[in-house]
Length: 363
Image 1: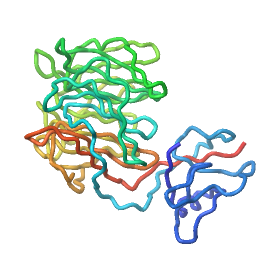
Image 2 (image 1 turned 90 degrees about the vertical axis):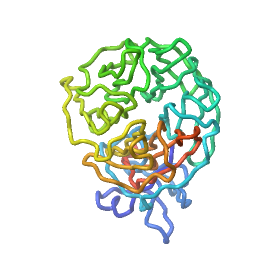
Image 3 (image 1 turned 180 degrees about the vertical axis):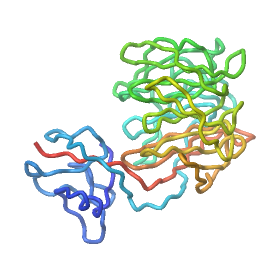
């Protein structure tokens, strides 16, 4: 379980009888039952029946039950960028997603290899990378998202051309398996997980930019076509936020932002992106969506909804991938991309200073 921190003031404000021991010099408390936090805090003694602990996940530790209480808390960290260990394989047109606090970079293209099968895992606490099982279908322009602790890599350009290949990665066993292919073979699309489903939007095939939206149900291993986007485009980004899906920017509509409501299978056009671009990255941290880089703003970094400009990304690039370690750290990782002259392994971290925390009661 990853470590997150909660403001002591926030804990007291909701009246939680936290069983912790904290140093006198800090106002933060740990949120795991056994691990020490960065300041060395630990849960003190035994936790009596009925007492509560706070963690960064809704899944309670053994011997506890989730109370239904959760809230957004500030860690006190400065909202700023910093450089982290570079990804070993410099690349662009790749995908990134997160499982249990680890960031995975998947596929893409390098300066000397057109279609990569390389998958690398980044561990933020140790600032280190590890190579894991290779993607069965080497490809670039691939999209990926996480559902139920597993990664789904979808579509892209493979040796055979545009592909609908859907492959599932299980981090627990470090293995990939084939799943039902996406009906529309495509590349340079976007994907996001929402309500237990994987949504794939836009992209391109031999006929040009697409507005096609397809939904994947991992339980039944079936695809369903949904209402198309208002604006066909490729090299776009996607974000799942507060029960809605957002299609952000892209070539063919660089300022366009469309909102999808899965409850009634409808799209609506909302406030445009102020700094329109394509080939950018997107990530969601605790009900706030962020967009970074891309053609038209290679260092641009914004949050929405509504839109607001934030501190520029240090390294100018496009065709990058982004992922967020949301609950436990509230941090965003902008990984790889292209500088305009070469592929990059650059890995830059932005600390939003926000975490979502969950209260659990001792049984």
